Image (tube, rainbow, N blue to C red):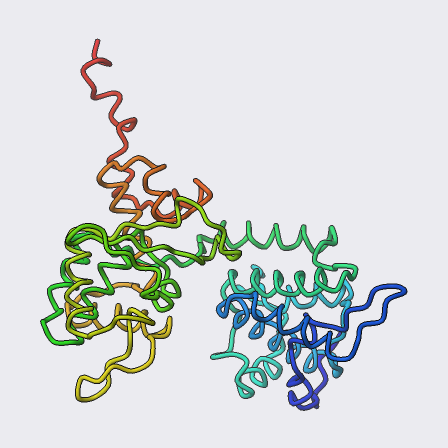
Length: 374
């Protein structure tokens, strides 16, 4: 498994990565008619969220490029266990007498950077390694092939790797939470211009309706927004990360009330939007453009943080974590919080709680309570 001193061109890896997930479908005794395979592929793509598809494609492109440069041949499924173990030790650091190191040759690492498969040299974050392993596992699962990622040796190595990183104090990077006090500073930067009205409405819509994901904000449509009374709204979240099938459920209906509703009405009135995307790009001259992308939602958060002079590790996801953290601060019952966020796992929601939330836990003051005094 030695890296060749003259690696083949990474152009070998630029074949359609979807071929790794969408191979020809066949059923014993039944021949698919011409064009049916394309229909299957089209439905597979349409039924997958754009974010998931993009992340899978990126991971598969990386796997293909690494395999070409490491072994001098294109990636073919199924992969062997030895190949997957090599991938892990190439990307996971281990402690040695000389310090932390991994098995990725420097020349291979530089080739991946030069070809645009990596942003910089060096091992990736542990979460990136886990994601790329999950994508490879999914590719084998879709094909019904023997899955090397489920091999005992591979699973044990990934488990020990996670524990090794944890013992070094390396934990998953979490974005800072945009709690109410911080959000107020962002809102203060929003004036009454069309852009200011949009950003105020977007921030409050995303935060107050339960901490919407950036993709949920960018894909918000007028047809799912219902006016209630003279001011409030109910927004029906017909699709989400945890409801990819569009199942109708009571928790799909998210309230937009109070200041959030007022800001949304002001934006809709000023923009004249009656149908289509709720949040859109504003071009020069105050003309509305296309719907915002998920990346644009993130950029609005970062721009407003900069205008407010707030330093920290913020992103669009900070609105979601900020909502959950604020709910914890104000002792909102967990079921009520989860009804708005859409979380199905209690552990996931608890993972958003920050240290300042823990101080509000009544159980932490049992010794100081009057009933506990002797």
